[in-house]
Every structure is written in C-alpha cells, then in structure tokens.
Amino acid sequence: MKHVIIGAGPAGVIAAETIRKVQPDSSVTIIGDESEPPYSRMAIPYYLIDHINEKGTYLRKTDSHFADAGIDVVRDRVSSIDTKNKKLSLEDGSSVDYDKLLIATGSHPIRPPIPGIDLPGVLSCWTLEDGRNIAARAKKGSNVVLMGAGFIGCIILEALASRGVNLTVIEMEDRMVPRMMDQNSGNLIKKWCQDKGVAVHTSTRVESIEESGKNLKVSLDNGEVVDADVVISATGVKSNIQFLEGSGIETEFGVLVNNRLQSSDPDVYAAGDVCQGKDFSTGEYSVQAIQPTAADHGRIAAMNMMGKDTIHQGSINLNVLDTLGLISSSYGLWMGVEGGDSSELYDPERYRYISLQFEDDVLVGAQSLGLTQHVGVLRGLIQSKIKLGKWKDHLMKDPTRIMEAYLGCTQAIGHNAGVI
Image (cartoon, rainbow, N blue to C red; front, top):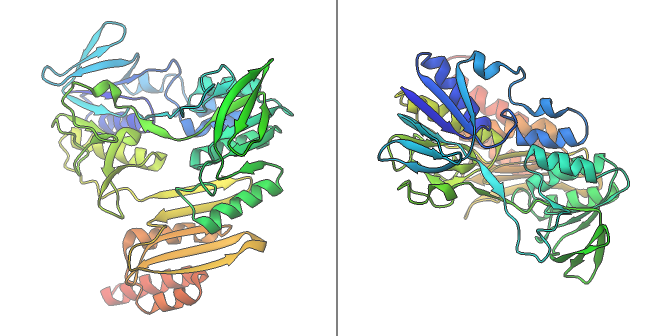
C-alpha cells in the first residue's frame, strides 16, 4: 500500500508516523513545499524571542528521524491531482503515484486589500522565512505595527513585545481576540496590553501603507499616521485548496469530509487547517485552524486510510492564549446558545473573568481570564456533556465553583455505576 501525504505540518507528520507504526510494510511519503524539515508554525514566536533556535521549531529533533522511520520526505509543491489515475503532478515536472492520499496542506495568511500591503517592509509571520525576516527588522527600540489582534496576532504580539520593540496593534473589530473572547474579556486583554506599554487601537482599520525613506507610514481610518520600521499582517488565514481545482474533490471553505475524514473521493482524506471537519459542539462541519485539531485529524485520517474504521467525534473549539502573562481561554460554544442560561464573574480590577454557558443543565461553552486552575475542568465538563443537575444552580450563583461541580457530578456518576 502506497500512502502519500501532502503537507509536512503536525497533521501530516502524525499521520505518517501512525501509518508507519500500524502498517510497517506500507510505503509512506510526505510532500512538503518548504526547504526546512517539518516544523511547527506555532513555535515561530518562541524563535523570535530566542527561547529556541530554528531547530527548536522542528517537529522531530533528530536529523535522521524520518529516514530512520522509513518515511520519505519530498521537498516540492503539488500542482495538481489526477484522482482517476491516482497521480500527483509536482512543480518540478515529476509525478507521484498513490493508493491512499491525505491532503494536509494547511492554510496561508490572508493579505487584506490595502494599498501598500505588498511593500517589502510588510511581512506575515507564518513561515520560518517570515520569522527570519522579522527577527532581522524588529530590533529592540524599532517601531512595529501589527495588523490583527486575533488568536495568531496575539501570539505574535507576545513575541514582539518581548523583543523590546515599540509596538502598535491595529484591530478592526471592537475588541481583541473577537473570535475567542467576548466584550468583557477582550477589552480586559486590551487594557492589560496598554498597561504593559503596547498601543492598541480597536474598531480601527489600516487605510494605506506608504514608503517614507527607509521606513513606512501607516495611515489609519481615525486620521492617525503611525511610523513603522516593519508592518506585520496577521489578519487571518485561508485553507490551501486552490490546487484542487479540477480534481473533482469537493471543497467549500476547506476539503469537505465525512466523519472518517474521507473526502468526496474514497481514496482521498483531509486533515488539519485544510479540512472542513466536524465540530464537536454544533455537529456542523467547519475549518478549525488550531494545532490540537490538526494532531487529532492526522491520527484519525491515518487509521481510516489503513482501513481501520475510526469515527471522528468532532473537534472541540479550544483556545488557550498567553498575552504578556495574562492567560485567557475559551471552549465550545463560548458565545452561548439560543434559549440557554449563562453565569459570569467580572472582576476588572484584578483582571479576572469567567463566563459559563449552559443548554438546560449541560455546560456547552466557557471563557476564562486570569483563572488558569479551571482550564482542564471546563474542557472535561463540556466534552463529557455531564448533566449538572443541582450543580447548575450553584454555578449560576458562583461560576468559580466549577471544580466542586465537576467532582460532585463525576462522583455521583461513579456511585450510580457502583464503582465508588
């Protein structure tokens, strides 16, 4: 059996290693279009603050790891897929045959349609090459403008602030991390950053970027003009599906799959940022561009590629973020459900916030800020869909009693099952 994986990120690497472990006699090939060994994009901010060197971003730490495992790594870009003949065309003119194919091509940064966005001093922070370019320009004391304060933007923010730059953040939405946190928590993160010396503009757009000598001038829609040595764009990502045009593989926002991560072609699967997979909380199919989902997808897709029937139960929306020392998290349907109840504790002076969302007596979503002890318990309650019973009333009065509620409910289940 010849397994081919397009994409050398976490989803692709975990899939390859899973296949090699379960089917040691199969052929396994990873095709990646970057010159470096497979690495984690999420490690690039740690590279920027010198916590790790470039090798520290690599997904596997020995130079011979993939060769020793019998996994071929091809460095090239796939230009098209011929599903009828099970053949990939590469940009160097060669081709690769497959029996089972995994598309794990990830995503790419969105470049907003702003005049000047393609100037040399405007960078993304998505590849190791981007990291090298940012490190060369974002020196201590330099002026840096960061466009976007979403999840990825805030991770980059942390790294840039640690480099000692003069940082200005521009976010078009009315709060920071708007797809992860509500108005209360998003604005507390904003205030926290401002207190740490970061200039943050929300409800603000960049209108244009212009060269001014060796530097850049960034014009905002509020009339301000900000000088910058470098501008970093972190305004979202989009799945890498463009090369699938004409392949017959069905796509929407990503590759459309079933609950086995199988595409419209039975011999082609998808995983990670390119996969429009099942959401645990809603049951709908969407793209979840986070590394835990990619890792989960990679393992499950690999099992199904080998004929080991494995159902994907759905990925839970899970984000944990460290912004200059302030930990925030959101889970599941953190924005609530129609007809559901909610409970919150808001303590802005201490940068503490917790919000719980219920459907009947089941916890379906949550946010927390500055309350790290609840992180694992919140996830456990949401994923297990435990009926809280009387504990819901306690949590409606005091949402910080989440640990008591978890222990109370799980012990009750154990007693009912006769195991305690």
